[in-house]
Image 1: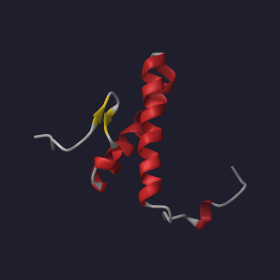
Image 2: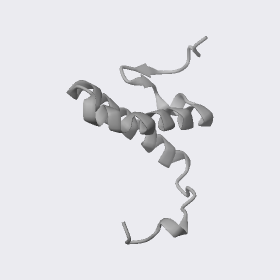
Image 3: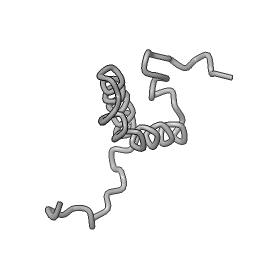
Length: 78
């Protein structure tokens, strides 16, 4: 059953209304489907994917401004 206090937009539930587990699940789903959407999705699907990714990642950064940064990933060897 859906929480009646959650705000739902055309792209999904407002990220601020998601618990941490739900936020992580939604982020994982978007990242898992990113390449398929980029390569094969219609423009509207790609636009929606980009918008939703930005919404969820912005919420993540607001909650975890001091997120865990792996020092071994701080390299110029891309």
